[in-house]
Image 1 (cartoon, rainbow, N blue to C red):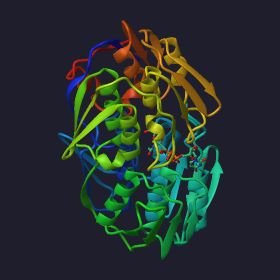
Image 2 (cartoon, rainbow, N blue to C red; image 1 turned 30 degrees about the vertical axis):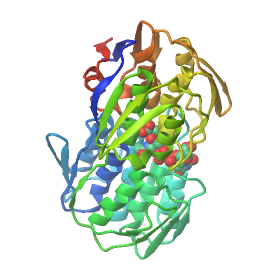
Image 3 (cartoon, rainbow, N blue to C red; image 1 turned 90 degrees about the vertical axis):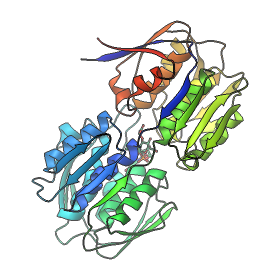
Image 4 (tube, rainbow, N blue to C red; image 1 turned 120 degrees about the vertical axis):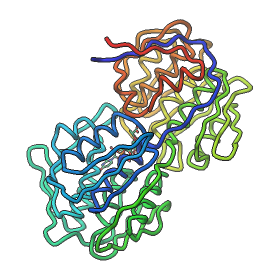
Length: 420
Ligand code: EPZ
């Protein structure tokens, strides 16, 4: 059954939000469990549809999976029965491509469905494939599948990414940890989730240096062992709720955040007139003045993250001026804009740039979610719109925001989920 969310706008959000574990670390961390036959225990794993999809894939491969309340998962792969990731799993969740590197690295073979494109762009994996081929994998594309073989194992080498790719860096990292010799990744992603994945892999016995910089060195190990590891907080969830507090003229205490994971975002939002008070691992967020228009360009970390672009667009749609928002990462990540304009926003798109002129009010409407972060932006717009908003195709939202109804309701929002 499809689900929708009805939102009555106009309620300021006040209270506390417990930030969940980061989806974009939990997914590669689950894939990393394939690199050892010993048990890997992950704590603070968010309850999300995407996590469930990855667990279904690991189960299909033959992993033993135990879930412990509140948010721990243990995975053992000592009796794996397959190295194939079929289309039905990968089409549901593109990040399934992250099993390619670990399977190839540990089992010397893997057959993984090509993820195909998604709403926000073509989302190629050519850079993943080229890097693995440089490491000695024989890879062919047959009937929509990546068929990879490395009978003599993978060999370390220098790999320079022409553009920064987060899962590309992660996939090759997980291939390199068991390869022969040294692998150097040049122009590697430096996202906090990539750094945390390297910490996890080193906890498992890998030998990775330079993570957090654009040159990462991995000395291949004979084997890896199990470990226990805590998933870092989700910085995109932090940014989303910070914007929600500002939009609704409320005051939210965001609990369990890492301030340094969002410095560019916080600097930008402070320039917009939003106040952040760090309180150890918590951040108090509120606004004392009108929202000022500040231009942004989405960039790889530490730049402004593309995953907060749609949410920031809502903030600018009710600013006291005009701002330019340029999306440099994905070619089709403005699909929330026609829906926001139907709610009374004044946004025009010119290639990669959206020009947003603030309006006094948005108006409730029936809107359609198209992708994960677009759906979050429509919820944010509904929270401040005059009257009622209904966000349809809520499955997009549930892929990346754990318990969002509960978290919003506890802070005073009037939201109601219903099946259609
Ligand atoms: C990761 O996607 C995140 N997903 C995305 O979050 C995030 O938006 C993105 O990084 C950018 O930060 C996960 O970590 C699971 P990329 P990823 O490879 O790795 C092109 C969310 O909302 N490219 O860094 O797929 C690509 O098309 C999701 O949580 C190639 O052309 O992104 C894009 O234009 C959405 N060929 C650019 O590079 C390749 O082989 C950056 O993509 C790889 C990438």
